[in-house]
Length: 206
Image 1 (cartoon, rainbow, N blue to C red):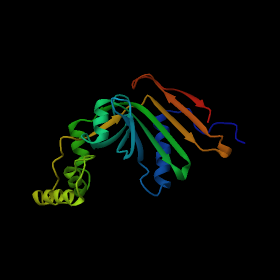
Image 2 (tube, rainbow, N blue to C red; image 1 turned 90 degrees about the horizontal axis):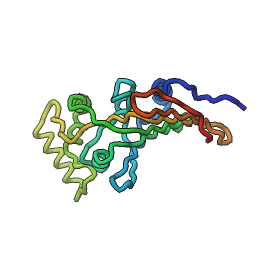
Image 3 (cartoon, one colour; image 1 turned 120 degrees about the vertical axis):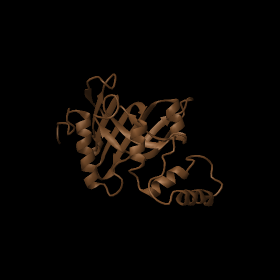
Image 4 (cartoon, one colour; image 1 turned 180 degrees about the vertical axis):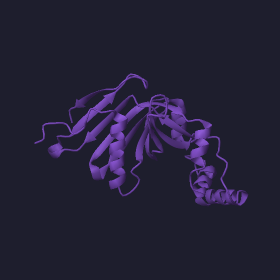
Protein backbone atom coordinates (compact mmCIF):
# COMPACT_ATOMS: atom_id res chain seq x y z
CA UNK A 1 0.00 0.00 0.00
CA UNK A 2 1.33 3.44 -0.97
CA UNK A 3 2.47 5.24 2.20
CA UNK A 4 2.74 8.72 0.63
CA UNK A 5 0.11 11.23 -0.41
CA UNK A 6 -0.51 11.54 -4.14
CA UNK A 7 -1.47 15.23 -3.71
CA UNK A 8 1.62 17.47 -3.72
CA UNK A 9 2.15 20.52 -1.51
CA UNK A 10 2.35 22.78 -4.55
CA UNK A 11 0.53 26.01 -5.34
CA UNK A 12 -3.18 25.06 -5.38
CA UNK A 13 -3.89 27.07 -8.54
CA UNK A 14 -1.14 25.17 -10.36
CA UNK A 15 -2.44 21.87 -9.02
CA UNK A 16 -5.98 22.80 -10.08
CA UNK A 17 -4.69 23.52 -13.59
CA UNK A 18 -3.12 20.05 -13.77
CA UNK A 19 -6.23 18.26 -12.51
CA UNK A 20 -8.52 20.37 -14.71
CA UNK A 21 -6.41 19.56 -17.77
CA UNK A 22 -6.66 15.86 -17.00
CA UNK A 23 -10.43 16.21 -16.52
CA UNK A 24 -10.78 17.91 -19.92
CA UNK A 25 -9.01 14.95 -21.47
CA UNK A 26 -11.11 12.29 -19.72
CA UNK A 27 -14.59 13.62 -18.93
CA UNK A 28 -17.15 12.99 -21.72
CA UNK A 29 -19.26 16.08 -20.96
CA UNK A 30 -18.69 19.48 -19.34
CA UNK A 31 -15.46 18.99 -17.37
CA UNK A 32 -15.92 22.63 -16.30
CA UNK A 33 -19.25 21.87 -14.58
CA UNK A 34 -19.23 22.71 -10.88
CA UNK A 35 -21.75 22.80 -8.07
CA UNK A 36 -22.25 26.33 -6.74
CA UNK A 37 -23.59 26.61 -3.18
CA UNK A 38 -24.99 29.90 -1.90
CA UNK A 39 -27.09 30.92 1.11
CA UNK A 40 -29.78 33.53 1.64
CA UNK A 41 -29.80 36.05 4.53
CA UNK A 42 -31.60 33.46 6.69
CA UNK A 43 -28.65 31.05 6.13
CA UNK A 44 -30.77 28.66 4.08
CA UNK A 45 -28.47 27.04 1.51
CA UNK A 46 -29.14 26.16 -2.11
CA UNK A 47 -26.97 24.50 -4.72
CA UNK A 48 -26.98 24.13 -8.51
CA UNK A 49 -24.62 23.29 -11.35
CA UNK A 50 -22.92 26.12 -13.27
CA UNK A 51 -19.97 26.26 -15.67
CA UNK A 52 -16.50 27.54 -14.86
CA UNK A 53 -15.63 30.25 -17.40
CA UNK A 54 -12.28 31.47 -16.16
CA UNK A 55 -9.71 30.67 -13.49
CA UNK A 56 -6.21 31.45 -12.36
CA UNK A 57 -4.01 33.86 -10.48
CA UNK A 58 -4.99 36.84 -12.69
CA UNK A 59 -8.66 36.79 -11.62
CA UNK A 60 -9.98 38.70 -8.60
CA UNK A 61 -7.99 40.00 -5.67
CA UNK A 62 -5.69 37.02 -5.40
CA UNK A 63 -6.64 34.50 -8.03
CA UNK A 64 -10.08 33.06 -8.55
CA UNK A 65 -12.75 31.05 -10.32
CA UNK A 66 -15.26 32.78 -12.60
CA UNK A 67 -18.87 32.04 -13.54
CA UNK A 68 -21.65 34.09 -15.13
CA UNK A 69 -25.34 34.33 -14.32
CA UNK A 70 -28.50 36.41 -14.26
CA UNK A 71 -28.12 38.48 -11.09
CA UNK A 72 -31.93 38.57 -10.75
CA UNK A 73 -32.09 34.76 -10.50
CA UNK A 74 -32.31 33.00 -7.15
CA UNK A 75 -28.56 32.42 -7.05
CA UNK A 76 -27.89 35.99 -8.14
CA UNK A 77 -30.09 37.42 -5.39
CA UNK A 78 -28.47 35.15 -2.80
CA UNK A 79 -25.01 36.18 -3.99
CA UNK A 80 -25.84 39.87 -3.79
CA UNK A 81 -27.17 39.34 -0.24
CA UNK A 82 -24.25 37.19 0.91
CA UNK A 83 -21.07 37.55 -1.13
CA UNK A 84 -19.62 34.18 -0.13
CA UNK A 85 -20.00 30.81 -1.82
CA UNK A 86 -18.60 27.31 -2.22
CA UNK A 87 -17.77 25.36 -5.37
CA UNK A 88 -17.42 21.64 -5.93
CA UNK A 89 -15.89 19.89 -8.92
CA UNK A 90 -16.55 16.15 -9.16
CA UNK A 91 -14.76 14.28 -11.92
CA UNK A 92 -16.17 10.79 -11.71
CA UNK A 93 -13.94 9.21 -14.35
CA UNK A 94 -10.84 10.37 -12.42
CA UNK A 95 -12.38 9.65 -9.00
CA UNK A 96 -11.48 13.14 -7.85
CA UNK A 97 -13.13 16.12 -6.19
CA UNK A 98 -12.05 19.70 -5.51
CA UNK A 99 -13.88 21.87 -2.95
CA UNK A 100 -13.37 25.65 -3.05
CA UNK A 101 -14.64 28.24 -0.55
CA UNK A 102 -14.33 32.01 -0.37
CA UNK A 103 -15.72 35.50 -0.96
CA UNK A 104 -17.17 36.70 -4.25
CA UNK A 105 -16.66 39.86 -6.25
CA UNK A 106 -18.46 40.99 -9.38
CA UNK A 107 -16.62 41.21 -12.69
CA UNK A 108 -16.41 44.53 -14.51
CA UNK A 109 -18.99 45.57 -17.11
CA UNK A 110 -16.34 45.20 -19.81
CA UNK A 111 -15.59 41.64 -18.71
CA UNK A 112 -19.30 40.77 -18.61
CA UNK A 113 -19.81 42.29 -22.07
CA UNK A 114 -16.84 40.40 -23.50
CA UNK A 115 -17.99 37.04 -22.23
CA UNK A 116 -21.68 37.60 -23.10
CA UNK A 117 -20.77 38.43 -26.70
CA UNK A 118 -18.40 35.46 -26.95
CA UNK A 119 -21.38 33.13 -26.53
CA UNK A 120 -23.32 31.73 -29.50
CA UNK A 121 -25.94 34.18 -30.71
CA UNK A 122 -28.74 31.79 -29.75
CA UNK A 123 -27.43 31.63 -26.19
CA UNK A 124 -27.32 35.43 -26.02
CA UNK A 125 -30.96 35.58 -27.11
CA UNK A 126 -32.01 32.83 -24.70
CA UNK A 127 -30.41 34.63 -21.76
CA UNK A 128 -31.82 38.02 -22.70
CA UNK A 129 -35.32 36.56 -23.04
CA UNK A 130 -35.26 34.76 -19.69
CA UNK A 131 -36.47 36.00 -16.31
CA UNK A 132 -34.38 33.27 -14.76
CA UNK A 133 -35.91 31.49 -11.74
CA UNK A 134 -39.18 33.42 -12.06
CA UNK A 135 -42.49 31.52 -12.54
CA UNK A 136 -43.29 30.78 -16.21
CA UNK A 137 -47.01 30.26 -17.05
CA UNK A 138 -46.17 28.15 -20.11
CA UNK A 139 -43.12 27.47 -22.27
CA UNK A 140 -44.68 29.18 -25.31
CA UNK A 141 -44.42 32.55 -23.57
CA UNK A 142 -40.66 32.14 -23.26
CA UNK A 143 -40.28 30.96 -26.86
CA UNK A 144 -42.37 33.92 -28.03
CA UNK A 145 -39.96 36.24 -26.24
CA UNK A 146 -37.04 34.48 -27.93
CA UNK A 147 -38.74 34.93 -31.32
CA UNK A 148 -39.40 38.59 -30.60
CA UNK A 149 -35.72 39.22 -29.86
CA UNK A 150 -34.67 37.33 -33.00
CA UNK A 151 -36.95 39.61 -35.01
CA UNK A 152 -35.74 42.75 -33.23
CA UNK A 153 -32.07 41.82 -33.72
CA UNK A 154 -31.94 39.87 -37.00
CA UNK A 155 -28.15 39.76 -37.03
CA UNK A 156 -25.14 40.53 -34.87
CA UNK A 157 -24.77 40.53 -31.11
CA UNK A 158 -27.61 41.07 -28.67
CA UNK A 159 -27.18 43.86 -26.08
CA UNK A 160 -26.19 42.37 -22.73
CA UNK A 161 -28.96 42.81 -20.16
CA UNK A 162 -27.61 44.91 -17.26
CA UNK A 163 -28.51 42.20 -14.75
CA UNK A 164 -26.52 39.53 -16.63
CA UNK A 165 -23.08 39.52 -15.07
CA UNK A 166 -20.27 37.41 -13.65
CA UNK A 167 -18.66 36.73 -10.30
CA UNK A 168 -15.19 35.69 -9.20
CA UNK A 169 -14.75 33.46 -6.17
CA UNK A 170 -11.38 34.28 -4.57
CA UNK A 171 -10.68 31.17 -2.51
CA UNK A 172 -9.69 31.08 1.13
CA UNK A 173 -9.75 27.27 1.06
CA UNK A 174 -9.17 24.69 -1.68
CA UNK A 175 -9.42 21.00 -0.85
CA UNK A 176 -8.24 18.25 -3.20
CA UNK A 177 -9.71 14.75 -2.78
CA UNK A 178 -8.43 11.63 -4.51
CA UNK A 179 -10.17 8.26 -4.24
CA UNK A 180 -7.98 5.45 -2.88
CA UNK A 181 -8.61 1.74 -2.34
CA UNK A 182 -10.69 0.62 0.66
CA UNK A 183 -11.91 4.21 1.14
CA UNK A 184 -8.47 5.22 2.44
CA UNK A 185 -8.90 8.43 0.45
CA UNK A 186 -6.25 11.10 0.03
CA UNK A 187 -7.23 14.66 1.05
CA UNK A 188 -5.16 17.84 1.21
CA UNK A 189 -6.62 21.22 2.21
CA UNK A 190 -4.98 24.53 1.35
CA UNK A 191 -6.04 27.61 3.36
CA UNK A 192 -5.16 31.28 3.64
CA UNK A 193 -6.57 34.07 5.81
CA UNK A 194 -7.21 36.47 2.91
CA UNK A 195 -6.98 36.38 -0.91
CA UNK A 196 -3.59 38.14 -0.77
CA UNK A 197 -1.96 35.91 1.87
CA UNK A 198 0.28 32.90 1.32
CA UNK A 199 -1.17 29.39 1.40
CA UNK A 200 -0.68 26.81 4.13
CA UNK A 201 -1.79 23.20 3.78
CA UNK A 202 -2.43 19.99 5.64
CA UNK A 203 -3.55 16.47 4.92
CA UNK A 204 -6.97 15.48 6.28
CA UNK A 205 -8.25 12.17 7.51
CA UNK A 206 -10.63 10.69 4.89
